[in-house]
Length: 397
Image (cartoon, rainbow, N blue to C red; front, side):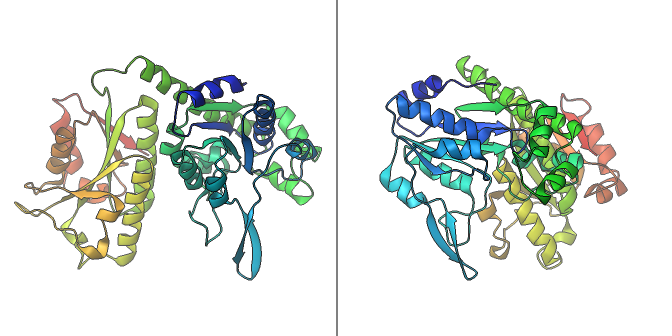
């Protein structure tokens, strides 16, 4: 999909807060950096104060040629593990405050010692300071798609961007190329050099995988457009769909449930939240410290993807759970709720009613907390409880 820089300029003129434009690609070498630099030249010719905050050319001659003639804020040196490494200089950009800044490699993890851990957090700081940003990343770095990408490629993508960040974008543009052209560019050495070519061919650069990644990228653009149409139409008076994700201390299944629910909520432009029912065996005195750590990590993941987290305590009749400082649950965005029910199914049903859920999302019944769940017929009882209602039960395999 193409993009007209005039549209972004119109957005800038209407807002005092920084605006965000994102180029999203299906794979490396599709031309995101090249297109950002082209747009920077067009903006510069129109008299706009645009500067490069960070650009990654990967040694590609066509991209490097476009860097020339554009104002660039020098990178800063960060001393790490005995070496001087270079990073985007967030502080200098904030000080110089150009109207628009180009920031490449959005999913990048900063070198320890920088202000923020992730580059997308740097971009958020720039936007908050009133600086408009044009940035880019590949779709496989989107947090909620992590499981899908792993199933597709067998590759665990470690550098990820939260979906809530992408939802803030004022404009999302897909950079697209036919799979055959991309593979030819790779084999011709126009994307990577040397051994990296074969490595890429063995991983993402296969026609079927490229097409699937392309579909994911186009879907993100469609969602962004749909959200804008909904906003223009003032939305509806009430939320049509609302999703409740049920998780346990089984971190693998919990992550799948959280990401699946995040994708569903994004598809419906709906609100969602996470419920964790703490069993008596999972009290602070009994729960394994590693499970605690992973549980907190999943709370943080849910927060990052835009959900609220609620904790209910099973088997503690008429008692309000007290969050131990040691767990730091408050810092991870979790909220405890007074419970008066002993039964897990009743707790989940009550939580769904209290929080107006239209859909309950759980792990497959023979996994996760459902082992406990099904052993006491809680799964069957939950199905029975929601049967007279309009609540749907979604099981993640």
